[in-house]
Image 1 (tube, rainbow, N blue to C red):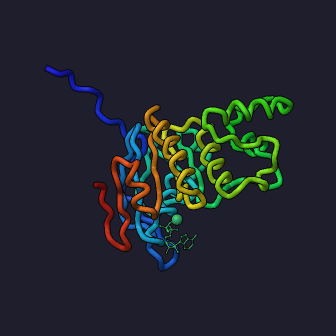
Image 2 (cartoon, protein in one colour):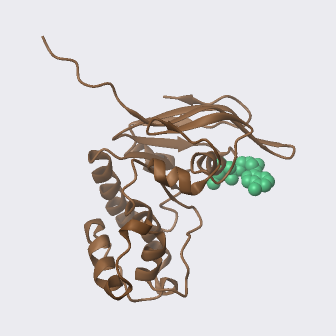
Length: 227
Ligand code: ADP
Ligand code: MG
């Protein structure tokens, strides 16, 4: 007789979330559960509310209705800092780098306060922090000198350095070529294997389906479903 393993743990739980911008109903009664170690694709047409849903989950947008639970604890108010503390990381569709600052300085700014090194140790610290991601980014170069692909990968690395329990990736491959996508997927799979829950938003369906275990479709104006 086999001993039943632990139930799959929901690290992110979205319950009945609705959100309107004026007359536009961006989200209507959306519920999604994301488990530790799974890659969960979030797909839908342009304008179906994918970025809005990530905004609500990450505390940037207050939902009109519904609730978000991160690692078992409710996101009681729309606060990005609170979402981060509960274990959520996000890589934005439009990168959040300060282009005049170096890669190391950008990483420093995105790091939790208790993980920041002394200012003088920043370059060594940045090399060490980025090393596991295998991106070979020049830490002393200004972020504005990175290629678009490098900026996109750096955006994900910045989110991962906080060691989130769940990470939200909003269209993370738009600037990547096929080889870079393969490398990126290897990184995502490695994170999933380490138990991180991954929400992967993409409109490149074949690409995201190649790595995702489950998929939630956000249709226009209809309730969504997880398959
Ligand atoms: P997706 O990421 O799936 O393309 P979005 O979440 O960006 O969709 O947008 C969903 C809908 O909400 C769209 O109709 C969009 O125009 C609208 N919307 C998104 N953000 C705002 C905003 N800040 N103000 C007004 N309308 C918005
Ligand atoms: Mg979007």
